[in-house]
Amino acid sequence: MIIVVNDTAAEGSGIASSFQQEGVSATELSPCDFGGWVAAADDRDVGAIDAVLIGECDQRNELAKLIKKRTAAAIIALDESRSLDKTLDLFAAGVDDVVDSPCHAREILARVAAILRRSKLEEASGTGDIRVFRDGREPIVGGEPMLLPRRELRILEYFVANAGRRVTKAQIFNSVYGLFEVDIDENVIESHISKLRKRLRARLGRDPIDSKRHLGYMLVRN
Image (cartoon, rainbow, N blue to C red):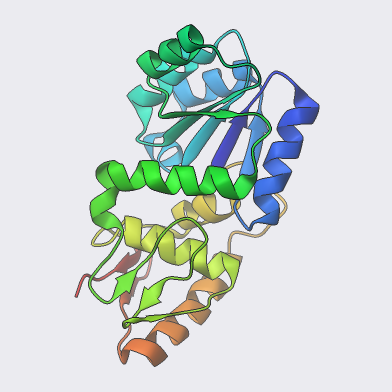
């Protein structure tokens, strides 16, 4: 999930919409709302964030420092008028990348994937016969690319990032649909996972996803 933090509501909504068109859940929040939420949110909810995009706002440096304390999510600053001093201040505050605004959603997704590869999540990018890229490319399953519907791809990426750890249906939903989505039934995740497991079984000859009632799901390392 990607969170867009922006003082300009219309601009923020446009950015969030561009990610949703790419099949990636994205939500826009004002700097005040985001700062209050990220400071008080549960660790599991904060852990569902893949990246935070921060537009031009007075609190940008402070928000970047706060995010770094709570999560390993990629932090990207959107800048309409760059200067060396401002860019250096942003990096000092913990921002991972600075891009010109506007910037295409696919480019930002590629930058997020690169940042995560360099972070602690790099080791979770593959589990032997399953490898994902987090930038829209098809995953490699059993040595061959596998074409997946967007939601199933996001679920597989989440499983790989948490391989060997059990995750709940709510955690998967938050990662795929967003923490603030209230119009979609959480049980839709069960249908997506069922279809994904069938595809993986057909390709691998085994079911790599272990499920336990009331405890959740786990991608088993092979």
